Amino acid sequence: MRSDLIVARLPDNPPDGPPPAGKLDDFIAKINQRSGQTYNPDDLSADQKAKLQQLLQEMFGTPAEPIVHGDDDETKSLADRLQLQPDKLAAGSHLYKKHCLQCHGLSGDGRGPTGQWVYPFPRDFRQGIYKYVSSAGSAARKPTRADLHRVTAAGIERTSMPAFAMLSEEDRERLVSYTIHLGVRGEVEFRLMRGILSHNNDMDDDLAAELRSALKIVLQQWVNADGEAIAPSSIPTPDDPNLRVADSHLESVRRGQKLFANTAVGCISCHVDYGRQSRYLYDAWGSSVRSTDLTEGAYRGGKQPIDLYQRIKGGIGPSGMPAATSLTEAETWDLVHFILALPAPSMLPPDVRQQVYPGR
Image (cartoon, rainbow, N blue to C red):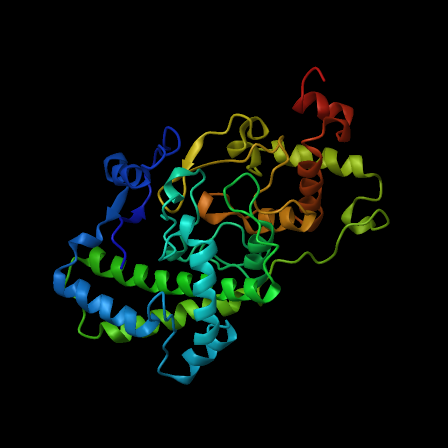
């Protein structure tokens, strides 16, 4: 059961830098001193811990025998749609312990034996929030199954997350199912713990009903994600005047740079000097994050045009990047074209190149 601090509110002031290697929990523990707020699971009484542990195990099993126990047809149907059947979860758990536990930890907390010694830290699945997702909705929106497949197969550039392209498609399916299981279990636990600790009261007699309700809500969010993927109404082509790229790709890049530099749009506010001078910020887990240096051409959420389109339209909520909902379809593609051209000075119009790379 969870024992590390639950981040309830982030500090107003940004951190000075990343957490020191091996000191993530110490870094999070200082949040209260910086105007933020955390809750400590150790503040639960022994009886509360025992009751919560028992209910969680009844509902989700153990790492050796993972399950999703639903006592009504709707919950069972949602779990089946997410491919959380016991046989698939058992196989996924075996693969997870072989390939993923070292960094992501047994519970999916991102605190495996090597997890705290790499930066950025491995994903902590338990809060129910993810950075690189293609689904629409709130900041806590879930990834689609395809999102998890992409990360599993391709890895995440410039992080310790490797590609598992050599695994069979079937094994990657099992890993994805088990990753979803860890996310569902962790979020249900997170919701209940936060509720108990924030109200500073005794555990409700009907805690089992609260867990069942939370489980159904979380499962439904995961199911909804696959039906809410962010998709452009059309892909720009040179002969499509409606998307304003017929005049030339360079013109689209030029418009994109103007949008990027427009403080009303907001890109340049976080990606200072196109990311070369960006400051550190707190992320939703209480660690720190730094806006990407876009001149380097490394995009952790994927480097295909559709990947950048989805990051812009949907934002990256846990890192504080808002969704650019005010941009038109054409403006979004202009911004995508500029970002893709940004790392290569020769691909930029001369006037834009002088603004981004003075003297080159």
